[in-house]
Image (cartoon, rainbow, N blue to C red):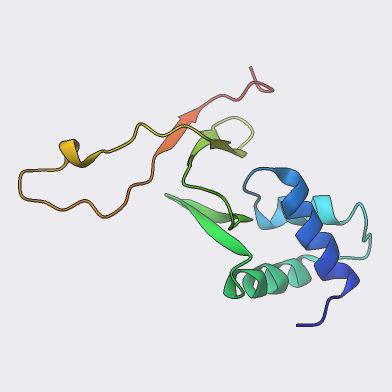
Length: 121
């Protein structure tokens, strides 16, 4: 895939963010270095970057996916209910197999915390 100014700005915005971003957040951050960037270009490039394995989707129940750089270790997320931003939670409670019903096999887990971020408090 050709490396364009728009794609470079999008990649850098996601790398610099340090947290999962919505398409609109990617657009706002990437426009700082590429003012003519449009939302359709962001959607197209985020999809391509996911297909290449550079990004992974962070799925939120009842909300559009956010996107983060895919090379991170296992972690969870915090969703601020005021500003709607998503933050990474580096800690993990560990093996949750004990919570599964008897005879069930846990293959993976996702934990999403909801609350108010430090900036919104």
